[in-house]
Amino acid sequence: QVQLVESGGGLVQAGGSLRLSCAASGRTFRYYSMGWFRQAPGKEREFVAAIRWSDGTTYYADSVKDRFTISRNDARNTEYLQMNSLKPEDTAVYYCAAALVFGTTPLDADKAYDYWGQGTQVTVSS
Image (cartoon, rainbow, N blue to C red; front, side, top):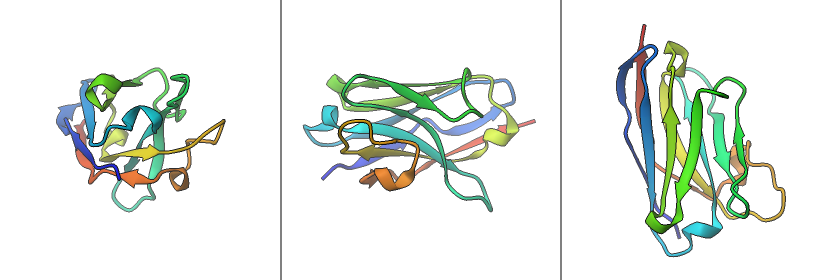
């Protein structure tokens, strides 16, 4: 069982930055691939970024590539999402998720994930 708690959301002006954190419980965090998803009002949840546990490979949605950076600190059981050059369209509830997967299982679909956090609101004003 893994519990995930996000933090770091808030209100920021367009062009600004935020760093989201996701703290995980449990001693097996290092074996989980981690992801970030987001859901804007009236829209479906969408993939943002992921990092594979085995080799640290990262994946990004096209809409956030070159602006967002996903990382992890296994010693601290924490995942991060550094968000720069924020746009109003980045406004959403952001969720972290943990996936116990092996090989090259795609990480851009929410069905790959076993555990989810409660979400943190990010609001970008224009």
